[in-house]
Image (cartoon, rainbow, N blue to C red):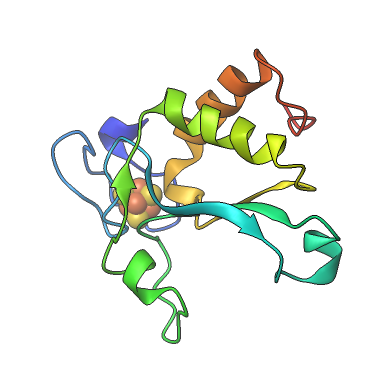
Length: 129
Ligand code: SF4
């Protein structure tokens, strides 16, 4: 899928193993931050907070993006899919109400793989799979 990427409506049809499309996302998930977020909408954050994972890069080009350094300048660090799965589990262990993925679209295949790995361990926020 990533060798001829059409994961979003921009349909770059590039090989993400060798080049970048409009989102500037490579093959490995790149994260800017993973942490408890207590300031999302109250119905998401609840009392314990949301387990937020900010992905670097973005397929949207919103003019007033509040995460510009992350979404457009690609600030972040690449992690393996195994590590992404463990990050989800580590957030779960902090008793958050959910796992909250910010700008996940360019990484959907990697995220699905990570959720499956996490689910095979002890991940409980995977009811959709
Ligand atoms: S996910 Fe990125 S590379 Fe793929 S079509 Fe969208 S913008 Fe292009």
